[in-house]
Length: 230
Image (cartoon, rainbow, N blue to C red; front, side):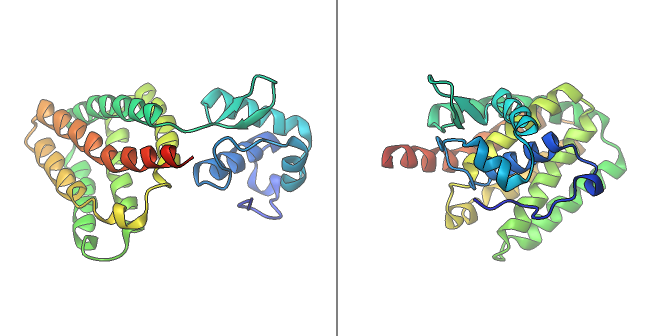
């Protein structure tokens, strides 16, 4: 188990101990530093994080509420399990929310917004033949984040960001070669932008929903194989 910030200065970063523990543990769980169903040993975590048990427990309570940590029948905590059925549900909810968001964003889009979205699309297109998958992924996320901001739907975006944390936890299981094969995402972003420019709000919503469910296929297939192997 490797923590992100060795020698972390709480005062310098202006984070409380409980917030520091929350962000560290959340990142570990999402990027796979803590495995599904792994027992949570408070004494060990408190020592590694160099904090007391009280703020650690507060952080764990928050993670339990978010569904990244679960409680066994005996009351002990563990990292939440993963399942294909849960992942499918996450993507269905995400596709519906993203469709709503892009529809609202399209109605509010300014020329400056269009330029920013187009920049993301152009960068994805330029990088598509390279091996820089991480950069392509970052520009894809930037495209969606711009739409979130444009939509001004704060409640929907808040739910969606939490949902995306769960989905990112599943994405880490996908082998790099399978991630590289997702070329359709590039044309999807181009189509969505084109529909936004054309003020085709319903069309943009449908294209976004199809884009999200298409991106789900590989992740669901990999998680299904993972479940069968354990």
